[in-house]
Length: 366
Image (cartoon, rainbow, N blue to C red; front, side):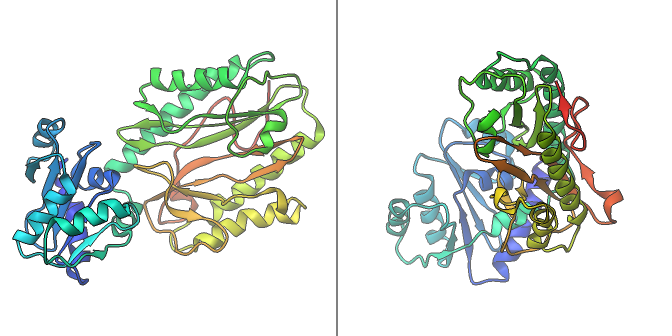
């Protein structure tokens, strides 16, 4: 594992060497983990354009850092950012790039006053851009998270019944994911039933399921720090014609989006491939969010698939494809899968989220 993280740091060093920075101060805890392997609530990393990086963390994580990051110089202290700024100044690394998108004004003031002579400058989202393309280890961890998610869903789905509450189902799914090997849920599980299904990020509450309800379930497991994301929609029978039609439309849109997701495709065009299917059926105003997003060490990360979004997909980029149709006062449908974009066309695409009780193409009537 140290070799994997060293290779990631070398990629960042190449970015720095090609730019106008002597070093980068990495303060996003997710990015620190990506570049070092250390999971910590207080850590930062100084990466010079050339030379040995320095990892700073406090005494609670010192032993873990020594174990997991033996190739890094380790600095044990509480004020990790200021301490690394001092190291940069002493080494003559004046042009210090920092992660402006995640740093507060208060922390920046402390950083700037920690060492005279530094010339801070924004790094941009350089590490996040590196994180988009996953290595084999990352894809394996993500695949395991997705497999756990599917196993848990298949276990719980047959237990969905009238009288159960949204919150009860959410707890059952989260418990099943942990029992199947998850570290924890990747995010708070969404269960939206009946008219609540028209709210894409509804918080599950005490509403009880009743015959005729459509139920949207958005869940995911976290494994090895990597996040799965999957949504399924079921109905407590009997299913009405409009429910079957709405589900079939969402499924057709998802197939179109997945078919468009290939290396080199513009993310806005992938979104449009699915969105156009829904719009042409007269429900364009009822699809209110982007088609999907990247997944990895965070549940939502680059790239973002949506109207007007910049960028293109590349080989080995995991994304979600999750079209939804939401009818106020009636309910909604969302179908979501996590897949890895691969070179070689559709045959080489990796669909990571699979369930046996519910397939994206068929509405499950319970």
